[in-house]
Image (cartoon, rainbow, N blue to C red):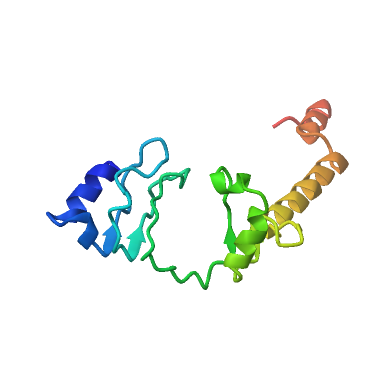
Length: 153
């Protein structure tokens, strides 16, 4: 269901000015943008847009009553392909606003890359496997030697 249609259903014959909560989870947005939500939602305190595949907040209206959601467990945030990343000093602003996060776009405040323990283990394992292959006999070598000796299977 498209976001605009979902908003109309959620209104349930109420005026946008009366609405304090709006749940738009799992609806489709057009071109990755918010559609159907505007400044008339003056009393909106709670807005949920989980899994709507937004790529831009450019059309997000000014919702003065919207309360900050508690993100106390948020440690890492990726904002790749979001317009906010084009703003000057956006990283500093995000780290200031969300002081609980450790990593933004895969890097901490000092630009140290976030550890990826899974990738490191895989790389080490691949290197060891390659070394073992180089040190051992080539594939099928033992079978060829056995056939040369006349003891084929």
